[in-house]
Length: 370
Image 1 (tube, rainbow, N blue to C red):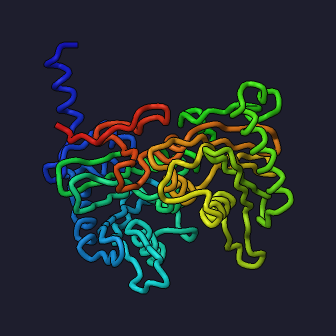
Image 2 (image 1 turned 30 degrees about the vertical axis):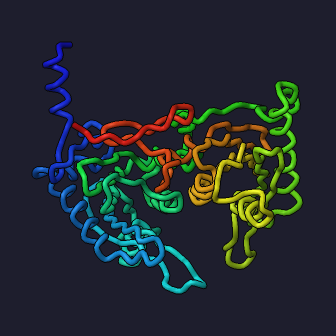
């Protein structure tokens, strides 16, 4: 293939939204792509404009970081049903610093309007995020949780982040939170490795660290069976620190409402309270989770975000197993690629066009698409 041909193909695959170049081939992975790019990308431009407008109404009282989001709701044939926008908000009271992100506010609006949720067959076809910053940012872990709740079973909703500059980030719901789709038989496709017995005693002699992993998983199992009050399968966690200490946590749920705390978040909060973990980061070596059921349950997006916030530039091992003795070994960067973090320790997604880097690769700095 000649250089001229390659340049021609690149030009054909590249589209523009208000002067911002996007990878058309990447966008085509979304079933809603034909609607998004119709009439000179009219729908994409509208989503970007609504997200940018929403960011002007943001109320980030504590952080000062404004985020706007717009979501496209589509029906079961991936035809557009409506657009909903939202901005982030932070409480003004010092005693209650609750935060709601723009993406979740937009989704809540669609649910409240009856366009999304169990009463419909609609789902999210695209999410556009806008921040008035020089570089784009991705959705936080909790927003990824909620987006995957309302995307298609394949997780192919297009997720695009814009900013003031001509940089952008393109990905999909499935790529942003691969662990949420393990039950759909896509673990291998998503690059998450299944390793039967990666934490059993046969591996314990490999290294002192391997023995710590075996001890940690045994403790996670014990914690699940003895302490968890989850309404479904009991779940437990053991966090291994770089100092060799193990911090445990169990999934806790209110028997009436089901509201509670997952096992990883419980362990993280306990570690912070005991002074074993801090915002300085870098103290987490591995997160080991056990589920007393036949299906692996990896940490949710919210817990993964907390791990990222406490890990700094480190990339902790993430190991999960269950009663069937199946196990999964991956890393934080594989389970939460491009974790939302405004510090220099962030592991950003590559700017469009590009794919989420695997956990064993060096962090990639976003580059503007030429």
